[in-house]
Image: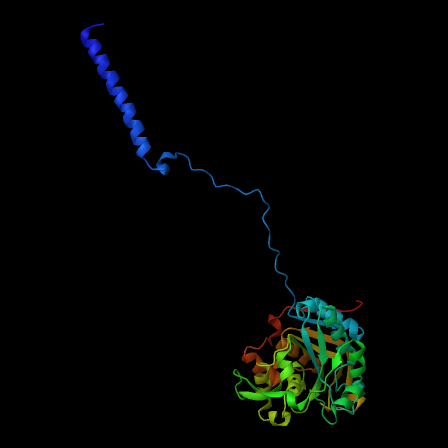
Length: 327
């Protein structure tokens, strides 16, 4: 090999070695991210992921016809998802029926059917309620007489619940901040403190309010009811902003179609064997107006309650489940 060739060879070897050292130096100084040519895929857990169950949809309102009172009540509540949807273990529950004049037996449809009330009480205990009380302020006599003559006391106590005489000392001045006509009224304290209030009116004609249904039945929670009749329809709606039942069950087993609210003539009674139930008191009342050949708009306090955002009176917007037992 010539001298020049040997010199060229040595120069090339030196240059190649320098390039190799430089490359390694630059690689060591580069950022770790720059050294990664292919992105590393994220780790995938092989543990099964918990899937949330789909939300259960219940009807807004249930209507059950054609059976005995207890069967009607049980099915109506079942369609809404069961009493466990409203009553939890240990709850203090108050049931508010409409107990009419103490001189009237339930057949005259001036008072809530005792079998209906007892069925609701049993459902509450089955759902785990710690205490269930039934109470109202009958007119035209004493509460004791009204509870006994109506048959409600016997059936309620047979179901394991309590009949409570509403003490005049338990009505307390209560703010009604969302009221339009009244801002304060004496309301029964225990009802305000209950974990669950279940409203069970009987469906009947009323000379003053057109009909007695769920909204009107709330007047049995207040004192000085006679004074309440000034601007009655607005005051009923105002009261419903403060006394809010978890569930309204309208007793239409027997309805009073004339001479209400006291009745007194069996010719004014219609036997329909029907129960209407909803968590929306306005919706329940709105449906029940048809039992009397009326519409929600015919009962001013229903529309006032609707306008105040207390429920839905447009039946076309509601998911309604209607069934007839045995069919």
